[in-house]
Amino acid sequence: MAKKKAKKRNPQKQTKPRMTARERAMRRQQIIFGVIGLLIILSFVVTLVR
Image (cartoon, rainbow, N blue to C red; front, side, top):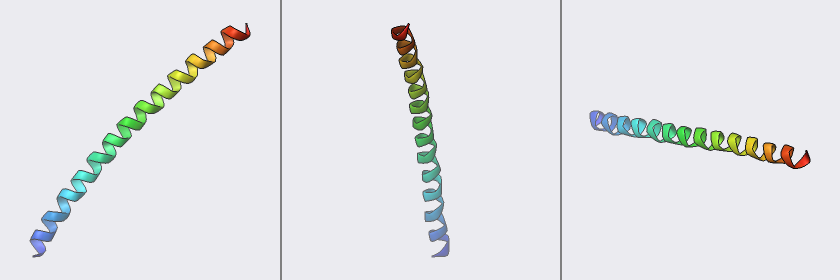
């Protein structure tokens, strides 16, 4: 029973980091796109002000 429980716990721990890694990659992409968007908006504002 103990061995079975240990085997069950290991896959759960392995699957959780994979999801977090995917979430981190998605968040990084969102942050990069957000920064690019802000830069584009700032450039448009600067051009409109000038």
